[in-house]
Image (cartoon, rainbow, N blue to C red):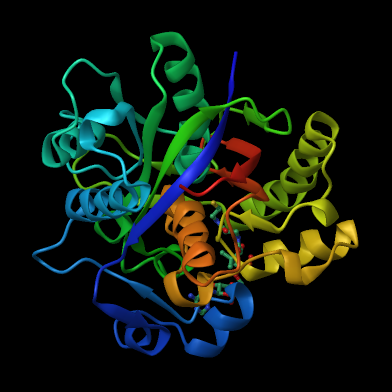
Length: 315
Ligand code: COA
């Protein structure tokens, strides 16, 4: 089976910025509590005209344009989300339709919460190898604002909306490595369709302990498989749930904090979108250049976790 590399990225976030002070007007919280416990200062919420679908399509379109490929070159379309606008059609099918991708290509959503984008990369690898195709579009998109209980201050301050996308290509790059896992449980849960208004429920301290223990496990597994350590890669992109989770991992692993990208101060936790949004910012800022190796780690509801050591090859 061939490996996979990223050739282009894109992102889309709503224009409406919601600061911690804005939230303090509607729920009993304050900027000091939120920013010291999480590192989050603001997040984006969709307006009436925006949705998970519009964000996914915009991010996917940008990634496709940046790849310099035609829609007909794409051989699989995967969308990671827990907040799609429809139970069916999938978000991936809506992206396929809006971007004019070919009909006979596998197109599906992945539900692995905040690990979803990295699950999606590995699903893309399997599908491309299985179908004899070369390129796939992998999108992570969320409109979590519609799942927030704005009376539950311990969860509603954490999440935001956004989408990120990447075009990936099969490659012979032997340094690619991935790790995926899950431990079924209800530590973070959202009721499904048919349960009335769905909200995110979370056992914050349990999730914190899970996250800080699983990230080093993923990093060690990636190192064993790829031969590359945190020092050897250009950047480490962890899921952007909470600054204290990343800082705790950095301390525990005695790693270089500068390697670990953070943008949760501006976007909060955007679940499946957080890793590809961060990746697209790094590419746009020139912090990740063609040929660079990246380490990426996701963790979240399910419980699920996922990691990848992957090359940003560029076009
Ligand atoms: N504003 C002000 N006070 C708040 C608050 C808010 N938004 N949310 C909770 N509090 C209060 C609680 O009511 C509690 O008050 P009490 O001591 O009077 O009862 C106090 O703050 C401490 O609450 P606790 O839940 O113990 O806080 P914590 O230190 O565990 O921090 C989280 C809460 C959510 C920030 C933390 O558990 C966390 O980051 N967990 C991981 C969450 C995450 O990243 N999830 C996504 C993973 S993909």
